[in-house]
Amino acid sequence: MSVSYPLIITRNNLVAGSTNTYKYNFSSNVDMGNIDIGLGSASIWFSWRNITAAKGNNTFSIIHPTLAGSSTLNLTIPDGGYDISDLNNYLRYYLVNNGYYIQNNSTNEQIVYCKLQVNPSIYAVEFVSYPMPTALPSGYTAGSAITFPATVKGPQLIVNQAGFGTVIGFALGTFPAVQPTVLTTSTSTLVPQVSDVTNVVLTLDSAMNPFAPNSKVIHSISPAGYAYASLIKSEPSEISWVPQQSGWRQSITIQLVNQNLIPLEQYDTDVTIKLLLRYRDQSCINR
Image (cartoon, rainbow, N blue to C red; front, side, top):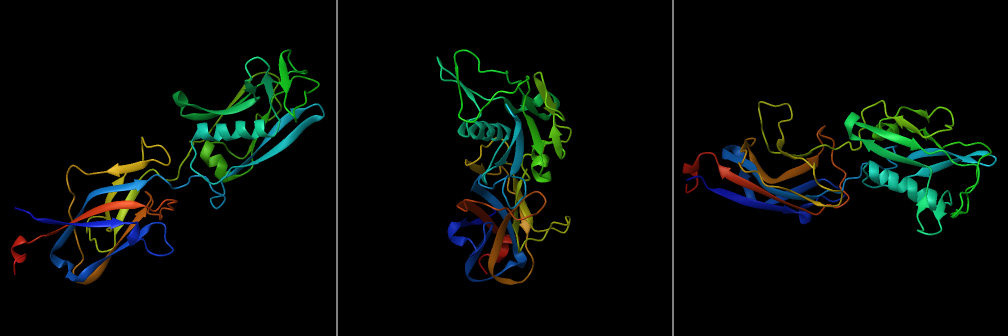
């Protein structure tokens, strides 16, 4: 019968100054030459941010029609985890908070004249521009900043940051190219890359996989189906045992990286990772 030994890694093992590296110290030196290690389970928080100032993907602009012609609104998205609906919510929040809306006097519904949306049928993101009337409609109250153009016009999206364009699938430019006079939908022409993390890969510094260039990898976890700020759990139904480099070690270090082996910038570093150790040659256990 194969015997395995659990090691539990938590936030207490986090390497100082790191957001992704955890070090486990053995009680005494261990000869790793006859040891295999596999992942028993892992729980990590979905806390890496896909939009940040550091990534250069957090700004865009809106050209909004006004009585004088137009006003350019420059939006800066707070660092965080966003999908396209979240970005639209931020766009709407900005417009309402800055007075670019009208409000229904009966229902109190606040209306803005543009939005971002996903079109899953064509795997695209769309910027929808609604034409503004030349006067406030009856039964509505105007926001503090909104004025109405002399002729019917709709807002435009300016993608002035390549990183943000990558997120929503738009090249640098203005969409639509001229102020529209009817309901207009601008569709992304690039594949939207909303997040730069599609998998969380666990690497172990003592691992040795002779069949792969990334010989330190012991497991990968997909965040698919998990909402931002939720707990991602992984418990393999079958343990993948990975041999370890020969030699004596006082510690092992596990790191969380993305699918490109770039260290994961976790906001919440609270994890629970259970590693299982076993002797490859069980006969040595009682020696």
